[in-house]
Length: 596
Image 1: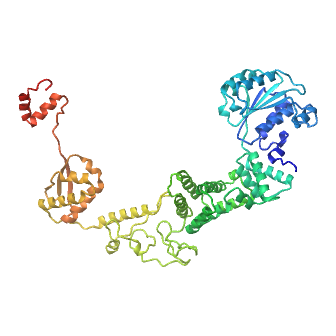
Image 2: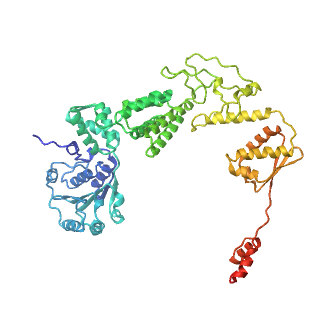
Image 3: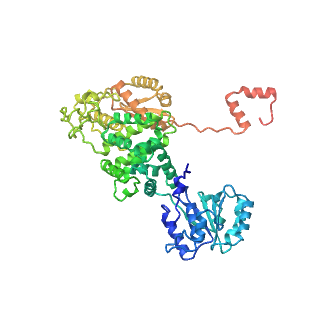
C-alpha cells in the first residue's frame, strides 16, 4: 500500500515563485541574493501556515545553489540542490526551539558554527519557534548572532514576535508575513484539485479558503478532509455540511424578509437554523459579516473588499441595491450590540429574536414608506390583514385605498387612525377633544434609533393637554381660608403615598389665603420646586376642589435661627443643662468635676 502524503507536504513550494501570497517578501529576498547583500540574520514572523519556514528553506537552498537561474531560483540539478532535496545536506540545520530552548542547546549550536561548509558557500541555521528560547539561551546567542563568521546565516521564524527580546530584534532583518487572502488560497486549492484529478466547485473552495483564516496549510488540510468525505467531487453542500458552516442563502432570505417586514418568516427561518444544531451566536457573527458585505457593495470602490466568489458577489450586489445605507448602518449597530450582550442574556434565543425584530422596525423608516396622505401600503398575503405599520399608520388589507374618516378641524392634516385607537391617556378622554372641536395632535415621527411609538404618543399627549388648557374656561369661584385648608390637607393625605417627602414638606405648615387669589405657604427650602409632577398635581387638585384656576402659589422659605453647635464635652453638658436643669443638681450631689 502506497504511503499517503498530505497535500501540505506534497505541494509545499520549492521555489520563490511558487510561494503563495508573499510576493513582496520573496522579491526582496531574490534581490538580496542577486545583489549579494544578504544580512547575517533574518527574522520571519507572522501567523501560522503563511510560509515562514518554507521561505527559509527555499532561501537556504538558493544561496547554496552552484548554478542559480537568472531569476535567482535554485537549479535543482547541482550537488547542493540534490543533497537538499534528499534531506542529506550538511550545510543546512533546522532547530526546533520549542524542544531545544536551553543554554546547552545554544552552546552546541555555537560550536557547530565554527566549522566552515564542505559543499556550497554558506551554512544556514533555521531556528523555528524562536520565541520559545529561554532568556538565558537568548543571551548566550547574542554574540554569535551579532558577529557570526562570513559563511554563517541565521534564519529565525516565530509566530509571536513580541516575545523576542529587543537585543535579538536589533540584530536581525525583520520580515512580517501577512495572512494569505481568500482569493489566493482558493486559486491554489483549484491548482491542487486539478493536479489530483478532483472536481471541486468554486463555491466549495471559497468556503474552505474562508475557513482556513489566512493559513494555506490549514486550507490544504481541510481540502484533504473533504476529499476523504466527498471522494473525487467536492460540492458546496458537502463542504457546509462537513465543516458545520451556515449556508449563505439563509442570510439572503432573512435580509429579504426584513426589507419586506415579514417577521413571522424570519422567526421560522431562525427556528430552522437552530434546529439544525447551529449556535445562535454563530448566526449573529455570520449576520454581521453579511450586513458588512452588503455595506461594502454599496460603493464600487469598496467592492474589492468582498472576499467571495464571483457568483456570490453578484448576489451581494443585487441585494445591496435594495438596502439603503442608513438601514445597513443601524442594522449593523443592532447586530453588534446583540453580539456583545449575547453571553449575558438569560434567554439567548429571545435576545436574538428581539434584535431581528428591531431590524424590521427600523426598515420602514429606511425605505421611506408612504404616510397616510399617500396610497396605503400593500401588505403581503402571508401577513395578518390588521397589522399596523411602524409609526402608528394603519394599512388596509388590500391594494385599494381605504376610505379615510372625516378630518378633524385643525391647522394640519392628521394621519388616518381608527377611532378606537385613541384610549383615555393621562385622564384626557378621547371624545372630549372631538366635543370641543379641538384639533387632533399631529403625530411626530420618532427619531431613528428609538423603539416603538412611545415618543409619538407622549408628544401627542403633551400637545393635547396644552391645547386643552388654552381652550379651558376660567373658573373664578371664590373660596375661603377654611376651604383652602381642608383642600390642602386632603391633597397631603392623598399624595403621601406617591411622594412622601413632597407631601411632608407641604403638610408641615398651614397655607394662608392673601386676598382672593394668592396662596402663601411656608417651606423649609425651595428644593420642592424640582418636583414638577408634585406641583402640577397640587394645582390640579386645588383647581378641581375649589373650582378656581386663577389662584397663584407663593412659597416662602422659613428662616431658622442660627444654632451654636457644641464641640467639647463641656459645651455639650452646658447645652444639655439648659434644657434639663436637674443635670446641674445631679452634678453637685455626685460631686462631678473635671472637664465638666
